[in-house]
Length: 396
Ligand SMILES: *Cc1c(COP(=O)(O)O)cnc(C)c1O
Image (cartoon, rainbow, N blue to C red):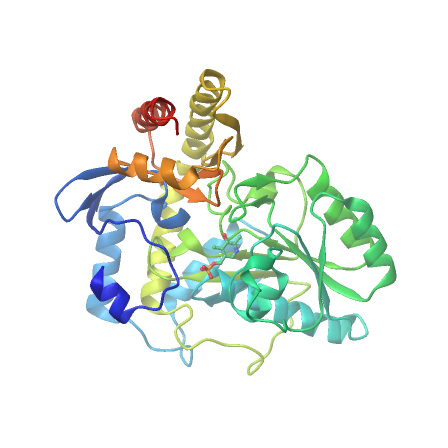
């Protein structure tokens, strides 16, 4: 803690624990205490910990070659792109290192496409409550002012509209030269907030009718988490651009922006990244994508997600005054507390060996590894039940 104060910028408020080892869905701290991890490095460690296939693939790649740059062909990068596209739509991939970078790439592709195909239209519409990353372009599209407060002015050409209001979108696209609309199907960082039924489908329809590109940010919702490869696929819509990151490298930094063949328009010099899509990251992505498929993790996310939903429902029923609601899709879920004690709840869970994530004052987020099983969900519900009883007994 003293080293952190001395050497790290104060960008995160950390829980008082250092994890040193992981196995399956469990993490271990310095003292050897075991924790059930329902956060997975914020939806990153989707295969869980100590996965032999991933470790072996990474070890092999490390022994052979870690990085060469994008000046040369890379077989892992080509294979990772092929695998990504096979679960999306005929398209092209740009690899980068994070979700913010994937969205920056999406914004740049959209702007160039607008220059070439829509008389220079460049404005991008996004929605309140959305989160797209901390770099300036992605931040400009982010719909939470608290992240922007000290960093104005934002880049130009971004229009923020109210989430779940179709009329505002229709009016804006009719009046202004908009090139793209970007959104999450379930807002993750603002507390696992699914769009109202029908909203996303309407956004896609209205966008298409105005020749406006649809960019879906699947950085948190993607890769099987909601019980589909990508969350938009449960809605029957067709995006032009999809961004992926978080779980893609199974813990190795890896992001991707996938654009449809019709929209693909970048040429050498337009965009790039020195480390983006390097051999190690793409070997990781190949292994993660294969593992999701070969281990049936998407259907596991669907069935365990349902089981978790039932467990959280039972808690909500039992403690009506304590829990306002539970919500989410698949293995992306939140318990919403009636009192502003999410931080307290989070740290009580931690001390009882359960990792959950407090967002703001009221929301407890769970985005566990996709390998989670019934027994883990049972103990999650048990610990939460115990924590709630303790908080109630101590007058919260
Ligand atoms: C986490 C997240 C990002 C940002 O990803 P980073 O890797 O932190 O840059 C962007 N969009 C969504 C929906 C996210 O959940």
